[in-house]
Length: 88
Image (cartoon, rainbow, N blue to C red; front, side, top):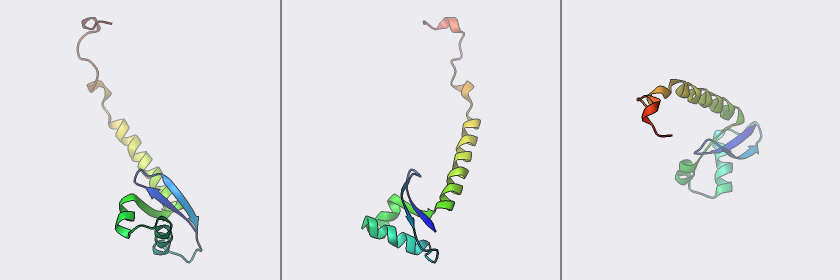
């Protein structure tokens, strides 16, 4: 199974192909050993997930961000006066 180490900005930093019998705990232990950090510090910086979980989560978050953009009301940022009030 393919595991990914994801930073707090949702970017994949490292991938590992581990035996399918390994679960999330084992994958996290593998990445903890690579980074040589205490678990609390590790958890502040990274998260471990399967490649499939990452792709699903990334696509879902991307869709949510696009929905937020659609909610953006651009006309509220436009100047309110007529164009001739501004010096160009």
